[in-house]
Length: 75
Image 1: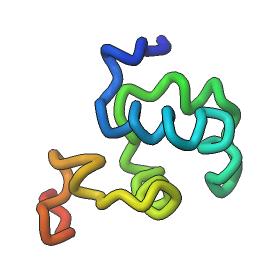
Image 2 (image 1 turned 120 degrees about the vertical axis):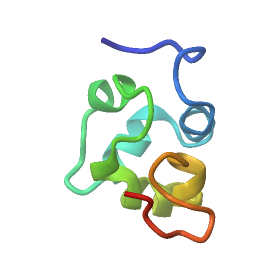
Image 3 (image 1 turned 90 degrees about the horizontal axis):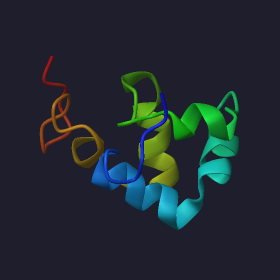
Image 4 (image 1 turned 30 degrees about the horizontal axis):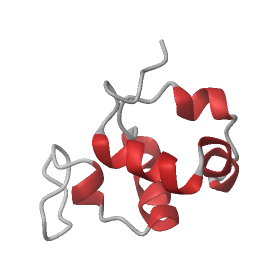
């Protein structure tokens, strides 16, 4: 189920607004279609490292539930 910008995580929405949903999908390895990225409510753990690099945003900012401010994984 796709999420509206109001339901999507604010940091992810900012990345989508800056880079574009299609471009974000193209930069992932392997590339993902915009439909895959559009369906994200937050960045899935599987894609976290790549999205962090692409958008120049810390893992903690993307997923504070998974990463501490110092970058260490919480669980």
